[in-house]
Image (cartoon, rainbow, N blue to C red; front, side):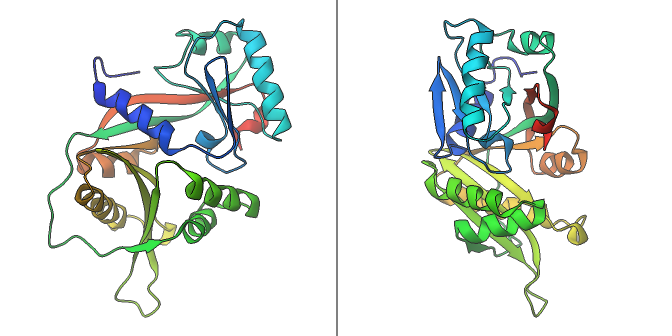
Length: 258
């Protein structure tokens, strides 16, 4: 599903790919293989960017070899831009199941400065990966891979924490990060601890992140959110984000969901 003639949607897809580049990747016939052992599926999947010349089964077989060598299940990310255009149908016909649908939302212009914008604390890659990993329930290998990807990304990530200034221990209210590429910025890994949800912390953090990116030259934004996460979608919609397109993953191995 894609908004017709939406150049910002295409720009968001391109920027999102650039911002999620792990050090472990390869290309086969125009397909981009991401082979990081991290938790995020976008860093350990195939992005089918070109149709290529090989028959689909041969192409999938070569991808399978690369993922097996990396100790990862083969996952294909399917978007409105995937090639060949009927890739989703072909994979479904072969028995590949669909999972983890996500919506890409875009923001046409960034917010204006406000005296109510909260102060946020910068975090280095290791600290951010550790905090997010704990909230996600990631294991040590996944946390290490996340930090490695953040450090090695050609589009620099900047991680931040929103903390409770009224508490003596500066308890975490929310954390998030952004990756800015020229005039577009992507928000990633926005998390609020379970006991702190429903109090506006995620919205406050996102506003602060967008304003910081705006000061650096960004004028538009995008993010990715689970298609079934209606609570988060409402938060982002109140900030002005609108639906651009949906993507999902396909795999033949049921363990690929994890």
